[in-house]
Image (tube, rainbow, N blue to C red; front, side):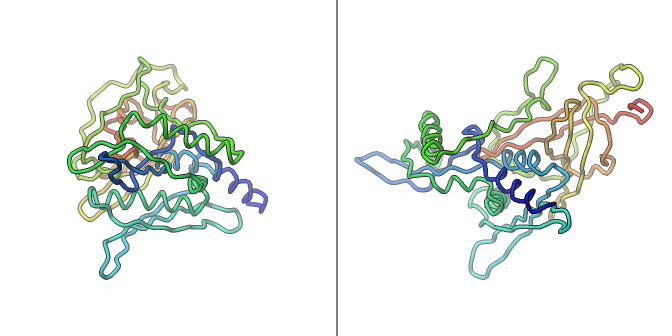
Length: 301
């Protein structure tokens, strides 16, 4: 990869995100005139980070890696390294880390460490120019959260910051077409408390027996998708299969499948797929619940 290409990639990675690709968390809360108020800070969602890397360098030219990091007398932490391929130099990795959170501890560390690692590559770095944004908060259980009606205020503060800096945002990164059923509605799950960002567990959903759709010889069903990459991510008590799937229109997402799926090698064509979205702390990820494998003799020549 030429030096000019490296500069172009850096510029593309640093472009501001659409407001829809941001999440907001409370940095702190305090009491003012008898009411609780909060300070909100933005972050780029992991979904948007993955989409940005896919679009700028290609899904085959980057990967991430996680490893625990222990420090004596401190909370356990997670390190994330994002590696990007440069021709003539191979993969270059930039690392950063985050402490495990108090709730969903390891998941929180994995999610936050990837966001920090992305900043090392310039992704979302413009957010460090945000001024303090005060928001209304409400109590949920033992925690304080940002009121939902504050989102418009937060989006405006972000867009005003970009305008003042003379920066132009890019369109929101979306891959919902991969999750659309025949009626065009995305197949999604409601928010589930306690769902990890990287699914865990050995249980593998049993694929529902379904007959492969009829099709003309030499063509693939419109609902089919192709596995472009697959790797096993082994944890202490479980294994997760991490996949990249591409649909007939060329759109690609990353998805997780619980357990080991060695048959899902690159090039495998899936039909009757059931993909669901899950969300935790504004981080959206995709789960492959069930699928059928299209036999080789039914694939295009």
